[in-house]
Image 1 (cartoon, rainbow, N blue to C red):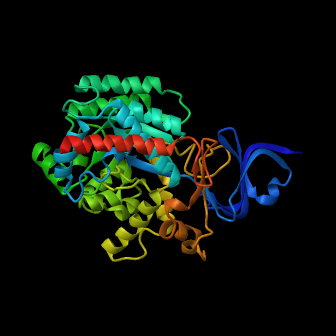
Image 2: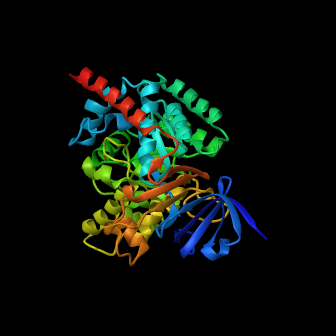
Length: 439
């Protein structure tokens, strides 16, 4: 019987990242509609017909990478304020620049971020920013899977104004994007130090009502912990526990300054953690105790944070840093092995965002979020261990093709959904405006 598929990706090593850790040499992956139809050795597909074929040319066929935390439209501010501590960076540079943001600027910045992510192998990202409808629109246009939410805080927003309007805007996003094939909405209060307990509690209630992620910056620095201790007599984690915000829907970003009791509370409430090592290094926020979190059974995924505190969105570089920083911090080369870190960028990242049923691994029935790595390069030759190569040797430029939700969005390093030259020109015009204003 002849099998008919929409897309066949073949002639490569299929790295499934499934719970059995299957690696299929000389394998192939078939896509029907938006989902993976079948996976197996190439000979399994000898009697099939397909509308499109993608030749992996002996490379790696694997799940797309998942960025669990970023502020995509901050591409507009990339390099604007570097070599500063977090609070100076935020209060003296970022917040003033953001006060002049508009829907169109956020949309342009998000398109640039989507182009960068597609080109470097990211097929799904989680975003917290202003004018998030513009980010959702950009993700939909680019064809990138996204979990987005409007940042909420106590002071007036350049987008919605007062916090009551912020909750109305969040409701608008929930209603508008309900049922969209690749865009999902989250509730996203900024942090315990910029959000009153009532704001955090209401955010948690919305998350519970709609069964959507609740995403917050948490325990990013020691100064934040000291501030919360002074204000509430508790660590940031204990404060959220006290007001009933910790839950399995909560994605806690950063989690640098944790004690053992904090880690226990995160585990007990099945809180998910987004680890952003490059940003934490650049802002000198510290090193999150990720090995301890993993040992405790906390689900941890990787994220880049925004492109002003990183300053890129390349998840391959993030994997490399994540593995190495914990080895040198603990003086133990065995911690954070390549397999563990690769899972943090794929299947565990999907769990963090509540997408584990549709993304994070290559399995029949899951959505077809697939990338192809071109291994015909000096820095990827020879290859003894596929996971080690992906974490320690590969980079975003090695991604040759990307399929998201069954749609080919990049092939032979060419973006198929975006006009990248126009997008870069648009963001450069925004940068010129920012320079003139500062000047």
